[in-house]
Image 1 (cartoon, rainbow, N blue to C red):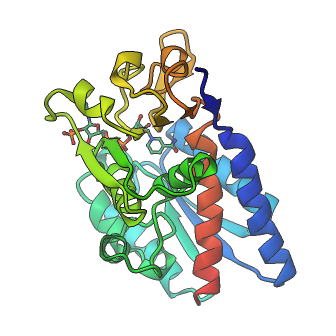
Image 2 (tube, rainbow, N blue to C red):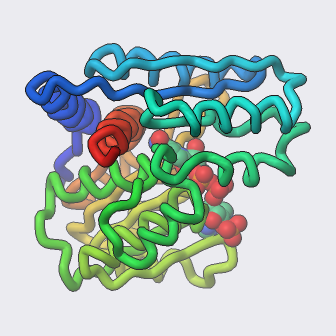
Image 3 (spheres, helix red, strand yellow):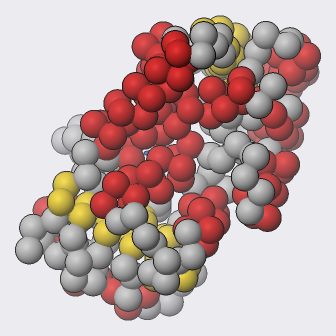
Length: 281
Ligand code: NAP
């Protein structure tokens, strides 16, 4: 069997079109503020992509750039100003912050007003997701991953979902979303024993580890839906996921490629979250 290749680029474009239509039809003017600290080239590329996506869908964006030497106080001041600015609907602080701020990164994230927290990382939004309250902002990558799963399987009820990785950014919210879909959810991590056996029982397998091609074909159940969140750069410069794609695509019923799978969904869901934050005002 050869798997359906889930086209994340196409589905992400459809989501962006929907956001664009809603903005145009309802004559809305959402605004996203992006805070970028330091000179990390990857962060600059990510922020550039987000700003471009905003322009594409009709979301106004403003950038607040700070030098790598910025202090906690400098960033806190900017967050407070953006929190108080009624024209700003969403605030995104590009992570990670420079190394010298790693100890205060979490407290700065928590300083963002929950109703503007379009990354869904504040305690208030994580709590709402945990309690099943629908009016919170959900982290973008798990939200996008669920959308991709739904593109091939509408009813997830009773399915066994295995999520590998338990980060606050991805694994934990992904597990909560799947639980809300009435999946039986197993969360796996670095201390999980017999991970291959755990994976082999998954109807839906979601990998967010950061280890190239770690999940082999004989770990995957025939017909499973496989979502690859990992982004790994190989020595030859190419990107790959956590799934051994070339092998697993012959076992799975559907699979996301890397690149072109989950990645593009993240930005589209950011657009969606910014629109939601604007509409909830
Ligand atoms: P993270 O915070 O580093 O978490 C990695 C998780 O993997 C941890 O829970 C860790 O377990 C687990 N893990 C590590 N080694 C393992 C092993 N041998 N077996 C089983 N589990 C293992 O990473 P993250 O932020 O969630 O990101 C994970 C990957 O997804 C990265 O490649 C990242 O680049 C990618 N990502 C992509 C997007 C996107 O837009 N496509 C967005 C976010 C993340 P412990 O908790 O026990 O340490």
